[in-house]
Length: 159
Image (cartoon, rainbow, N blue to C red):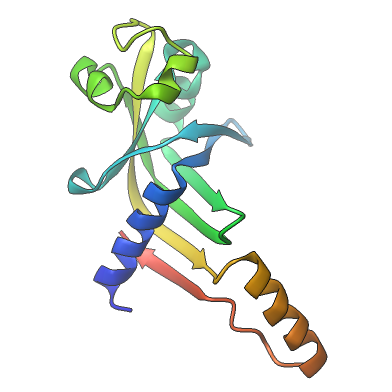
């Protein structure tokens, strides 16, 4: 694949998977929590809705480097994204990316406690295999033949 194809593959997998674990730094500790991602390829960014009381904004203001870990275990597709994050109170953007999952946390996009967390990716790595059953068959065949199995694509991508 070309770098353009690899970049498109990263965005395709992020869009397909949709949910990720967002890892931030909290002093010497790394904290992860599940988040629903909203992508804007034209901006080259991944967005999340978050609550002002969640403390992510404090962590990100001190340590803006984050990691997003996307996993589709059924399809055996994974993406790890590294980048810099920032938190804003962009009310127009909040309304733009508002969706059904957000209703679990807030009544409407006008809730004053909602913030936008924007991640500007700088690097990604993806693993995309042919699926669970095929992967198990390939691993079993490799185990008896002492050959390494072809588990699909794995690429590192500068974004």
